[in-house]
Length: 156
Image (cartoon, rainbow, N blue to C red; front, side, top):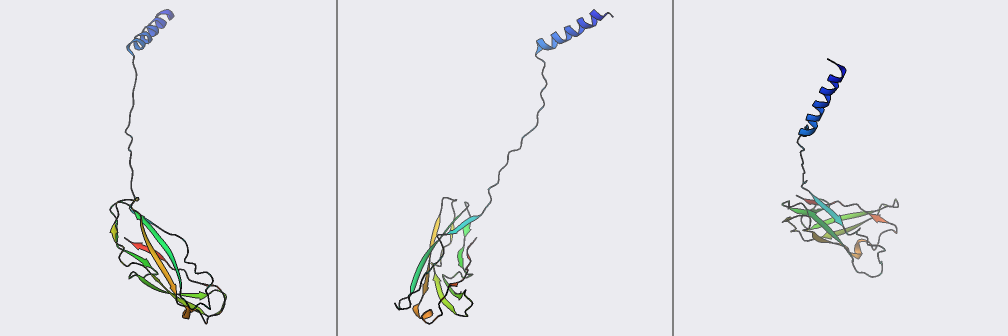
């Protein structure tokens, strides 16, 4: 076969495939998935900072902090826990952080019934914690800073 004949056959094959729109398509399947993790988010409006306690007033010192929480749709929040207590009353003890052995007792109270079933993260709940230190609990204590870290959690 001549060189011109081979070129002619190749040209004819290319012309036929070009005119028929010959294409090849390979495909696969893309899996698209998502997961909504069931859970809750909890935060505090700030620390329960009593500040400088008045030794002369005779009155109890009272401070409030708001607990804010929200949960995924359908989650049942059964209770709020402050320092491990779920009955609406926590009795705490702040220790002197200056090395003195003094401590100050205080109470934190809140509405004990906080259970609800969430309808989603737009369903925000607020619970007010009220901290109280009677004057008699600190009137005879040594000067200095007093502190305690108290866990606050929701059970679901």
